[in-house]
Structure formats: C-alpha cells, structure tokens
Image 1: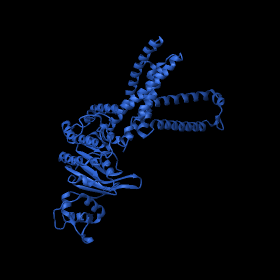
Image 2: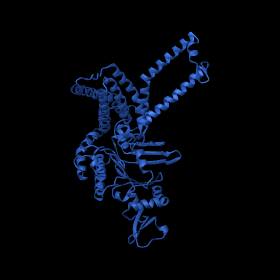
Image 3: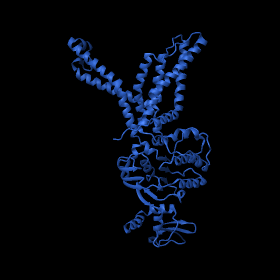
Image 4: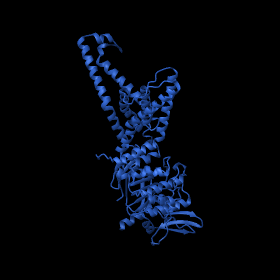
Amino acid sequence: MRNPQFNPNRFWHLVRNDLFSNFRSLLIAGGAAIGLLLFINFFTILGGEVFAPREFYCLMLFIGGYIITSVAYNDLHHPQKSYVYLTLPASNEEKFLSKLLLTSVGFIFAAMLLYLVFSILMSLVSLIVFGESYPIFNPLDRVVWICNGVYFITQSIFLLGAVIFRKNTLIKTLLSLWLIASALSIFAGIVFRITFWEFFDGWNFIDNHFYFSSVELDQKFTDFFTGFGKLMAFCFKWLIAPVLWLVTYLRLEETEV
Amino acid sequence: MMIHIQDLSFEYKPGQNLFNNLDLNLDPGNIYGLLGKNGAGKTTLLKLIGGLLFPHSGECSVMDHVPELRLPQFLRELFFIPEEFYLPPVKLDEYIKLYTPFYPRFNRRQFNDYRDKFDLPDNGKLTSLSYGQKKKLLLAFGLATDCRLLILDEPTNGLDIPTKSQFRKLLAGAMNDERTFIISTHQVRDMENLIDPIIILDEGHIIFDQDLSSVTDHLAVQLMADLPAENEYLYQEKVLGGYAVMQENTGRHDTKIDLELLFNAVINNREKMAEIFLREVENA
C-alpha cells in the first residue's frame, strides 16, 4: 500500500488545467442554462406568473451540474487525450480531487454567482420593461442550501458514471440508476411479501388488515419503518457520496488506455 | 538500470497472450530502436513501460518506479509521444503555461532553441499547425522537459525529409548519460545512424537485442553480382546491380549495416541469427 500523493501547488495547476481544458464545455453548458432561463422567465412574465428564482436555481444546478459532471472524465476515454491526461505528472489522488472539486463545490459556487448576476439583471430589465421588479435570488436561502447539499451528494453518482462509461455518459448513468432502483424495488417487494406473507392475498396487499390487526403490531411496524427511514437518511447523507467517490477514485487508478 | 522487465505477461483478451514471460533490460545513455512489424506488440510494450497498460503478471520497473502506480515523480521523468496525439486548442504560450509547471526542469530557452531549429512559429493556435509541426512541437517540448525517459511511437510518420534529418540531429544532440530514448518504428531507414541498440519484437517476443557494434562484429553486408550458395548467407535482397547479401562476419570485416536489411534478416532467419549471437555469449 503506497502513501497518498498530494502536493498543493501541483494540485492548483491541475485544477487550472482541468478548468481550462473543459472551458468550452462549461461555456456551452452555461450558455444553454442562461438561454433556457431567459426563455422560461420570458414566458413566466408574459403569463403573469410570479418568478421563483429559488426553484429555477435548483433546476439549473441539478440539470447543469449533472451534465457537467458527466463529461468530467471525457479526456480519459478519448484515444489521444487519455495519453496526455494519464501521463500528466500529477497523482491519481490529485486528478480525482481536482474533478471532484470542480464538479461539486466549484460548480455550486459558480452556479450561485452566475444565477445571482442573472437574477439582478433580469430584475433590472423587468423594472425597465414591465415597470415591476423581480424578486432577486437570495444565495443564503435555506432551500437553496438544501438543494446544494442534495446536489453535492447526488453528483457523486454522475462522477462515477463519468469515469466508468466511455460515451453517452449521462444517459447511461441515468439508465443505470433506473435499473438499480428497479432492481432494489423488486427485491424490497419480494422481501416484504415473504416477511409479511400473512397480510397478502396472492400478490395483493390487504391494507386494512395490516394496519388494524392489532395496536401492538401497528406500533412495531411504525417503529420499524421509522428506524428504516432514519437509516436510509443516514446512508444518503453520509455514506452514498464517500463510497461512490472512493469507487470513482479506484476506477481512475485502474484505468488503462 | 533504466528499465527492468522480468517474466512479464500481458494479454488483451483472455487466452490470447501477447507477451509471455518477457524479459528486457534497458540502460540509460542510449537511444533504443524498437523495431517490429505491425501488430508485433511495440506500442503495447511502450504503454506498459509508460504505465498506460498494466501487466497481468511479472515485474516491470522503470527508473525504480512501478509504472502502473503513475506516481508524479515517475511521470515527470517520462514524456510519451504516441503516434496519434492530441494538442489542446490553445496558443503556444498558453500551452507552455499550462503544462510546464508539471515538469520542474523544463528549460524555456532550450525549448525556444528546438522550436527555432524545427522552424516552428513563435506563437499562434496549436490547432492551426500541420500534423508534422504539431509532432515537432511535442518533441521540442518533450526534450525541453529534461525528462529521463522519452518514448516516441512512430515519430517520423508525417514528417518531411528535411524534418526527419533535423529530428535525428536534435535527438542525438539531446542525449546524455542520464537519459534513455525509446523509438518504436517500422520505418527503419528513418532511424539509420540514430538508434543503438536495436531491439526487434515479433509476435510478442524479443527476438533480437544487440548494439550496433555487436551487429557489425557478427554480420557483414556485401553487394554481390551473383547470389552465393544458400547456406553461405543469412539474407539477401535483390537490389540495383545485384544482391545485397547479409552474411556472418567471420573475417571481422567492418561493414556498414543497413537497418532494413538487418530487420528483414532477423525476421526471416530468426533461429540462425539467434545462434550467431548466442555463440558469442557462450564464447565470452
């Protein structure tokens, strides 16, 4: 087992390199996001609706972030670029952390800044054209930070997809997610059916019998599902992202051209 | 030792071994020529040395590093120019700014010198350069990094005749006792007077690994009007005015060895060649 290699100076240069080499795709994604927002906002105003900057921000964060994250390791899958990327004198740890930083925290702050500027501009334009101002995006809003947190965790799925899949990364990641979710649902359904067999008639669940058979039983189920829910919340908050980041790093480490 | 490979095995598909128990040792201070037919495994071997492919078994040590770990201290001593390469759509100055921080001994003055010798533009977008110019730029950059191991896969592909000559001069001039250059090619004539020792790879096996002085000690090439008896030569090729004949150098005559002839002789007469050079080892 070797020691992790991290040099702050080299890491900074790598971040700069990554940012520069992905600048075009960032520009395209940023332009597309602004275009989409302008389009939506225009019709929102025309329809007399109240502009909801918070919700639009979350939409932009998730869609834009997942797209950007999905292309983060494009160089790794390109026949010629992969030589440059893999022989660039930086450690695997630095190469992983650079992408992680840019697609998670980096993207969140860039999105907030971009959206704040956009929101101010839109408010000014609205004031001049329609005579009424927009509500300006508040980056300190609690909901905004909940969105940021959820994005920070879920982007790990797309970062893993980026390092695994060579082409059509976003679609393949979404498809894989759907397949995994479906498999887990089926598995959970089968376990539920076997465990609570007495509350089933064939494959039909006898709902009222389940809930009202006895108070004691009802409490047991409530406790079980509450505990299960807490466990799931814990896994989502603290386990999913670190585990997927670790798998991403290991996959990067074992990548060959 | 610069590169130490022992019992290395590698396969792209299960059951189809490209390398099986491959052994190879390369010393610093040489420009190695890695020759072989298409599909012989040259590029694969270079990728294994560069940490871009991982051996399935055996040992591969490069500058006392395990290449597959791709540690920064290993990578900054390596510059790999593949046959098909990529240059980002940036200006030359930006390229220098982006990549030189990773090579602590990069010498800008030396780079400018190589750039001038290769007749490359001072600045401008890299994507506007021709294929040959891009290759020259990469080579100039690679040499200026002062890396200890320079790997060049088919470097003369796409270069015009004056550039090939310039390429040979620059490479020979940049060599020192600390460095090793490995040049893989199937265009052996382009590498004449540059590569030494010669390594010939065929179907995943190293069938020849000799320096040129050993080659000239053991082999001689003569132009003959008529072909001698078949058991008196190792290889022959019809040329203008007769036959270029490669024979065992029993009289220790000093003749110039044509690399292409040598390559063809080794490929076509593998056992006999091995026998001649093995005899020397046994006698020693």
